[in-house]
Image (cartoon, rainbow, N blue to C red; front, side, top):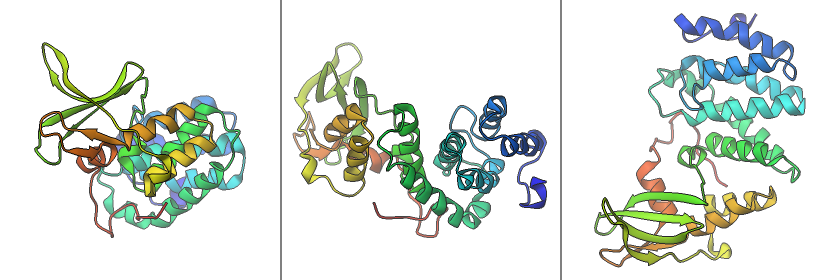
Length: 261
């Protein structure tokens, strides 16, 4: 029984988790309904997590270890969605610290899976997000990446005015958003040279290209390019500023271990 392998965290409605997880473990590639129920219990609406969610991570890791491709990809995707919620109010900080090795192993597993250039696009994107979550880049794990109709709202790091950065088919610009007039004082974005990207941004673009996610790879060169503030004319890297404002900061002994790219 699951309870004999790991103390279960979360009671009340989370009493439902062990039997559903048992069903998934028995038939990991064939019980679609059990997977749907497990997602509902452990990552409601894709992001809402609890202590029970983190308690399930070792079992999801075991499904990946078993090596059946479809089940492994499902387990990695769900585990990534759980870990992306690490900074929520879930009451599981102590439990998460004990799972550092499990999360690190999940990161290695998904990294190996991402070497396959023939992944279906939806699977590739889900595993791309999972890797970012396991590495602690939760803001990018949860980002929309809508480079057809995308907007990123940030503050200018120099004058603190609100700036809207548009990256889409209709234009790529920074602007001030006016309630009545829309985006005003537009300034064109400067696209990053892919060779100038480093660290996380370089990994994201290189991986997206390898997976055949061409719109993502292209969009990232605009996201990590430079925007001009329409008020003070200073420039900044949109992606860096967006992460600074939205990525929760945690210490080196926090729940997700830091890692290089």
